[in-house]
Length: 198
Image (cartoon, rainbow, N blue to C red; front, side):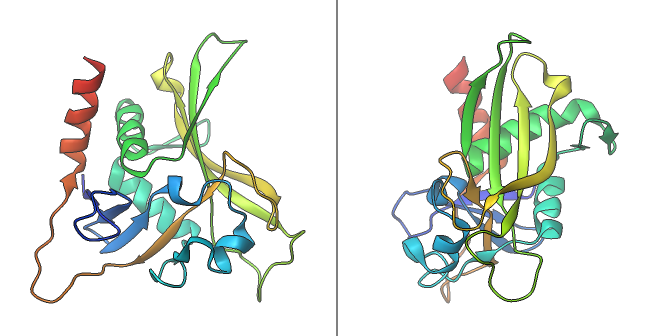
């Protein structure tokens, strides 16, 4: 896996950035922008698009992030190429990037862990507060791992806050001169998660 967890503020221990070493892109944790509308994030709320230089990711960039994490199932039926790896890869990506909301399912008796993040507006100019947005989702079914998948769907308007929806923000890798990359690899995060559960 090509993903490494890092700090947004150096040495702060905030773990708000995930570096994809294959694309050299840094991803902001979904927890940072949860319950902020698309327009609020675009306008600089939290300083992510201004002070820290992030921008909304495209659907293609999010797809590459999922691919590099090992997510293999898109939609309910498309599997490329190994469905058994999908659930573990999604758990690790959620551990790295946050944004999870738990939903107990009454019908299936399983627990759904879902992440939702808005992506770059496809039209020209700036969307209006009523413009419908698109959201990329990870559907992680804890009691039925083979059912876990990723997809994208329509979301609420660009001016609406939803507690369960964040924004996929990305930037080119930022490294101070003379520094070396330090962070937690996806393997280390997965081991830490397994230790917590054990």
